[in-house]
Image (cartoon, rainbow, N blue to C red; front, side, top):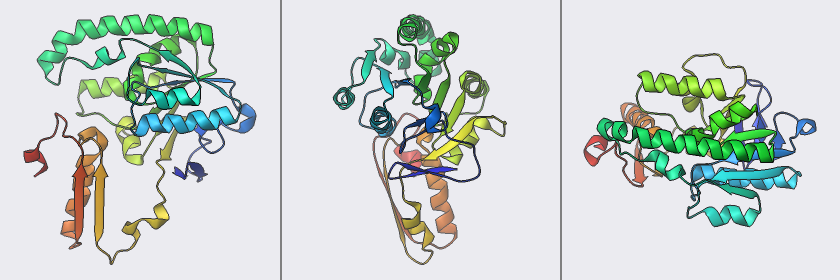
Length: 278
């Protein structure tokens, strides 16, 4: 496993060297193998977890003389945070159009031709960019950054896919998504064992790692079995964010006779409602 405490990686014996480590800006292994050019791909410039993780990565890599380029959309309330760090930002128009069509199957089906056309245009744009920049490594910062996977794969560049979420359902779309990720990636990085379990489903992948978020586990109140537990969740209330797992854990507290308080702070997405939470 890997855990980041104050953004310093801590390694156990379970996995091989991580593909990158924030504390030392190690890229694909040891400092002696540090790459000269890295492209970081994000589907949004927001002040949320995955983009903020990229900011930490940018600072660490630049401190170690790694040339960084960021591929992302043309708009976003957190874009200024990236511009202040000074990396080469390649803005791609059309990224936001990839996620239109709504949540219904009919809406998605009707929007499919538009999404296909936008993907083709973005792929052509990224092929030209990758040929010009010639990165040694491409980092996809979430499942939503998949629009850059095929262009990077076609150019033969190593791909690190950092997955912070898992998808709904377990049918053919989910299986195809898993196959796509494992086929395109040189390294797979997950933010938890639960995320890793969903994407791999027991499959054996050579280069896969778990990098936990920056929480000091030794200070967790969960280690004190005698005290009450207060849990504050801040973020989108969505299945892909693990809220269902959180509620399952709360049910286990109730069954064990433990007292706790849970507060959810954030917008409800289409896959949840007040009634389903109740």
